Picture: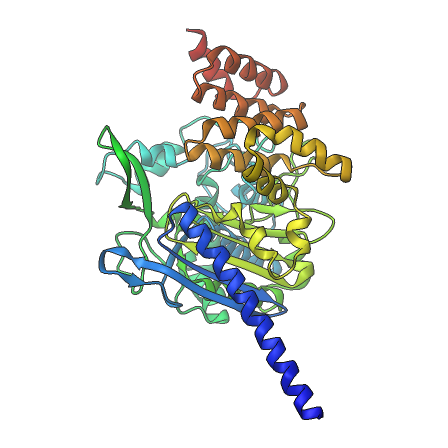
Length: 475
């Protein structure tokens, strides 16, 4: 009888596991259908083990090649978290000081650059001009790394260091230079030896569209216009991307979901960094006024909430991962469609493995409700939620990022409602008005946009971008 009960329990558990796996797969297939994602890899980690791993769709549409567990996806800016780990390894060894100025490690920098602290580079509050401005204004085939670096060093600062946030690649070019100098070898080799080899990540490599990468799943995008012509319907195209060697510390890695899952497990088990170092790396950096930024050290998707707090990163609008330290859990999603934005639904996915996670996230709850009821009900939904939970308040930065992702899909009216909600929730934030002004401009409402930019500049006199737009609107 005991043997029979044991067998029945095992069958029951197996059935439950299969049922959950089917539910998760159905959820993922729905996202692929809704967002027209060709291929996807997903891995979920719980208590030091990969408990779910799935490959879905096509890696290479042209030849009908399916995604498998060896298909390699571009992870883009998720690379920055690996750079954060590389920097913290140097901190542990006493070779790098997070509060030291960059001039302590790199010579011949402009005077305004020299006092910038290492942690300010990691968290994008340096105020440095973005090297992408140089690269994007260079004709194809004419880009020169050395000349571009000299050019960006002649540009003025965007704002006083530490006063505001601005995501840019110059920060991570400098961090790559620091890591290379302190290790005495190129940072790509450092990553290989200190992270990939330690963990066992055979499918994680640096490279771009110019490199031959076995099992590579190219990134696709949906175009509504090409060559100056509006297309009658969306067209799926292949993305071509060049990432110069100096910029690969910010956006140069390609990997698989299982490789990244093993990397997360190694972090959680202290194989790459000590526990106290992890805590430092995953803590928010502060502005000059003492207020926390939305960034940790190389980690830009951070949910510093009382329960089920999470840290992670997104890349290229096509990859995302979140680590839940207290829950000993992580979720990794890689896709081959630019603009698929898995960060929109990654916490909903996490909910299949821990239902309390999405329930603790106001952004996830708000998104699910607005998808049902319409984005014009945004303020109403928040007010209803606050009656049940007085502490319900979507994070300003997360709400702003979500609204921009919605706007990137040409859903300008829906995005406008989110920006209006953000300004109502955070009336003392210059950035909410700046974003609202941009949405109004997209919809052709110049007079209202002008008012929003004026409000933004009043709150932040260092908002140079807002000033430039106001000048154009005044002409």
